Length: 299
Image 1: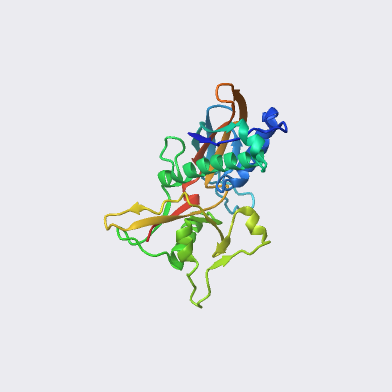
Image 2 (image 1 turned 90 degrees about the vertical axis):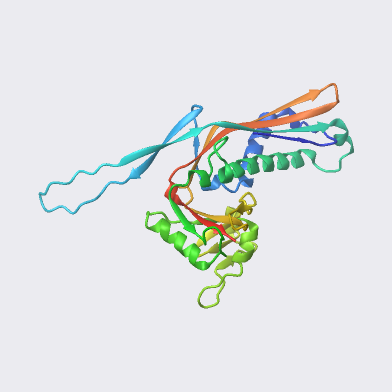
């Protein structure tokens, strides 16, 4: 996955390009801050291109035992998920004129843009990947769903969030995040409980939850909005629909790092410009399908 952008002017005359390793570390930290979905995953370091992460598919059992009674043996059942490293990269061209003419901190601007590009690329694959890079929540899910009205779709309701929580609880998962498109959130803000109280509790400036990426809570679950969730899912009725994802963090996915973010710079004598390129090799896989519930077909 490559992201190419070009700017009309710029280099850094303060030596920022001469320390790409330090810049790469800062850029990676910034990218992780901008990603909304990586923090929901268990993050591991991969020691090979393909990495197999163990999961528990069936737990052990505890028994009551009489005095001097024989303790019944109980075994864990293990499974595994496969992580395959993929490369994501961004490259920006900067002409030397921008450094001479700009009144802003070009390196800060470039760092923010490249970190945003990488974060959006990773998040989009986690949410929408069909297997070419990652396999997303939708493509892997074999567990919990709460469906709206089939082909025609239905409005989002309080009951759907409550039903999604139930689907997780019966599988011993406690969903703590819900992810939706801003357009869906617009409708969720109008939902009320039986006592006409809003179910969406919006966080205000200074709230510790804002630092986690949450903008509010629903039935105790933190709420995240993400524009990478599609709102144009079509059904036979002609409606355009969307989905809401409900997850338990650290159980819903594994994010693997095979190659940390690396940065490169080079000067092109032909066009008198600098090129900045960053790349990393990462992977994602759903860890426990039932740690995810899709509220489907929302109108």
